[in-house]
Length: 260
Ligand code: HXC
Image (cartoon, rainbow, N blue to C red; front, side, top):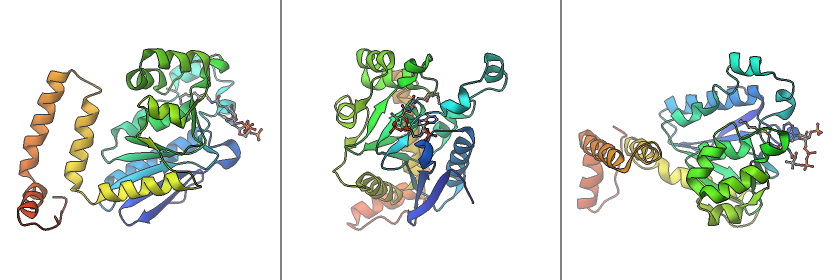
């Protein structure tokens, strides 16, 4: 498909790379960009040849937030009636893993976009933040809730109330991201693609089940979550990939998953 605000490619046969491509506005997330992003993710989720996805921006900016110029004149009546950001969390319904490769600014909606991905890898240049407070508003794309869950109350309060940026190293220390990758232009994208490739070589049924159960931990109690995990675990014994994976181990060979 021909997109205007994103670039999609296949750096590996089973990996989809989505690059936000609005460089002049530091990848500010205008509505059409977001629409294209959701479309690309939904298409990939339905495409059997895609095992995992990587979402990235540019060296300078993952995304500098929602588009402030697009938002500035909106009224309550518009945003409410027309459900502004109604499609914002659509990507949390995607079954396949999405890895965020963050370089440069990930601010406001940009930080929240990374937080909706399954794994975040950051370049040493990454700068996260929720600066909405400086615009007279608050995070609107999940930042207050996801940060509170991930980095704890005091840190979430600090970054949401002061709007200050925090570094990749802080995000790492706080447990918000998987890790800070080595220096060098493009390194974070390379590492994310390698991780996505590794994931795409597993049983895609098991991968989606694993994503589903980890996500459940953020939605429910421990008792319910453990029950949920056990049910899904049991269910995987109905798959060919479970038979193949365990037979391959016993026969000391590499598993040949058929995603069935
Ligand atoms: C619209 C933006 C933008 C944004 C940058 N630009 N961020 N346009 N919305 N969020 C535009 C600038 O207006 C400018 O356009 C061009 O991108 C380059 O930006 P500069 O400011 O000139 O670059 P620099 O001096 O390097 O500063 C980088 C920056 C700064 C620190 C990231 O751009 C900045 O503070 N941006 C806003 C960050 C922010 O407040 N984000 C939260 C948005 S609210 P021109 O035309 O002048 O060249 C939000 C709510 C989320 O995200 C709700 C849920 C989705």
